[in-house]
Image (cartoon, one colour):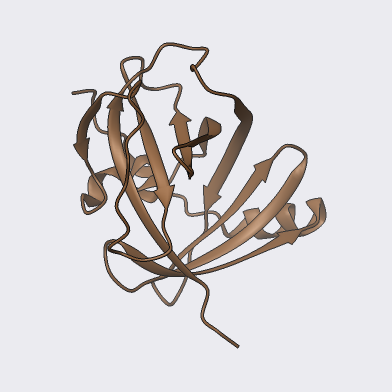
Length: 160
């Protein structure tokens, strides 16, 4: 069995104008981080009436092993009993869209009005990213731990 790697780049961007000039699929997401005795990132997520449990093992700032499975509402509720008391729920609206053959995820959070995240999962660490021309990047935050979703659940950085 092969290891399921997640290779991702993340950008802090200026809040774009909505609707975006491309077709998008938007979904509200609520996620909670769980206490994990191994120190790995573990979370549960509710999205569009479905529930997921995810375990991520840090390999590098760009690469993680990612194990995700769909779970029942009952499993979700049971896992929430292990919610990390130092973390709040993360709520966001994710806009998924295609641009120049790549799939992007634009996350809008209620605690920011002027900025958002743009993420892309890649097949390799060296795959070039073509940023959509309607997105203004403030900076890449792939390797900035303050902008990890887990860190946002503890305390979101103020807007740039």
